[in-house]
Length: 159
Image 1: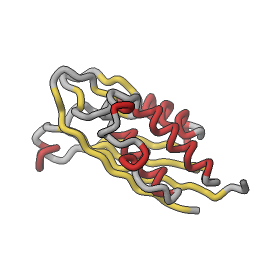
Image 2: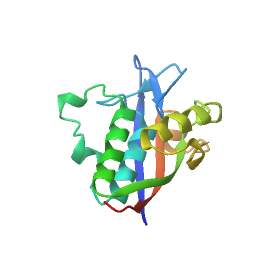
Image 3: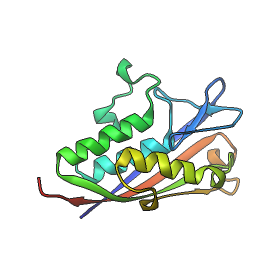
Image 4: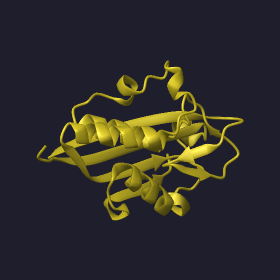
């Protein structure tokens, strides 16, 4: 078994929709980024790739590559899970913490678990998503953006 840790953060930006964990969330601003800027999916993608010893999201889906402009980050997560499987690793479970002042994550956590689990090829009961604030501290506490941390357990499968 191996563990992977992922982190991502994005600033809020006007004129974009807010996508977290593959779920469109009503909010006055979305997140700035080359893809759909889904910080949750990006952190989880890094965790999966790291657990399988395959580097990071930028190595596989570089932001300078126009193929990934406005990309659906759930699709990137799904591709990362497939890459891990090609190297004989199966995701066992995932845990994600989203840090932001707004929006509140709790109302959307179950939908995020469903979307993330589907991309990872596991049951939603093996995915956890929770929200925390930054207690008004720093750029996240000032409401300037969102950060996400993810940890994944993978197991080696016979291939």
